[in-house]
Image 1: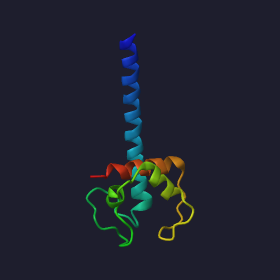
Image 2: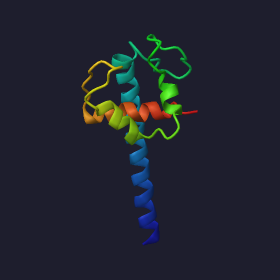
Image 3: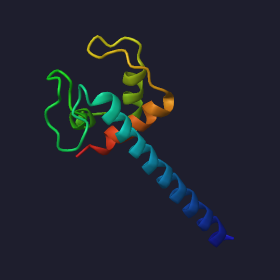
Image 4: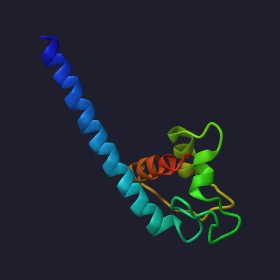
Length: 104
């Protein structure tokens, strides 16, 4: 019985990790397509195309930065410093997951 439960838990964790990896990949692609015009979105890019736009590495390194904080920021209706970009909840989750991978 314990072996069966351990196998189920191990399998669930493996599936969750595979889904998360796909989400991060999708988030990276979306960042390159939608966000890269203003932000440095790749690891190692320090300078954003728009000087006032922080790099995604800088965003990830912000103390207390979480997926929830990114979700709130990306879904808020009014951002005077950002264009009005409409993202689906899946897009927001994927981009947030990608940004958090850039934390050093």
